[in-house]
Length: 226
Image (tube, rainbow, N blue to C red; front, side, top):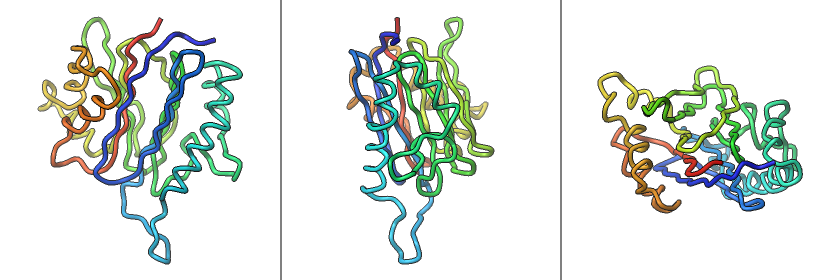
């Protein structure tokens, strides 16, 4: 079963790596995104640990394992992600807090009205959820890099999930920035209907960053759900 949904996705980076895949199944969107590798990492030969091949393997694993499962079982397949680690054909984890992606990562798999999110321990990344409760928008850190972990989050119309560097997120959410932090700016732009497509979402994410931002982020906004 699918709940009818419309997803808007965006990403921004000035370093690090992002895999972002979006597919349509029976008229409904499915999202898979992984962000991370904040540190400059290299192997003993001085070669980067991440490259096109690594990101391609994750994208292929998404198609072969996650997307095929959702196509067969519907959005309920998201629940199975919380019970076991998903691997691609080469034995690499493609979802969950145990997956390897450079020096660490955070990720989202979403379908219909549910999203599975994770953060690897000490990755430097976190998951922020922005939602409107009783007519008031608020931002909450759902997962932290300090201990890592995973969670299943129910999505409603107007929900926004963002994975980003935790240091930057903590600065944005300080009490003295309560009225003008980047997450609430993002929500206000979304509510005003200015984010009309994925490309514009990318632009907005770039505009809410400041000089203190270093790394990569990806976001999911649920425009409609019924």
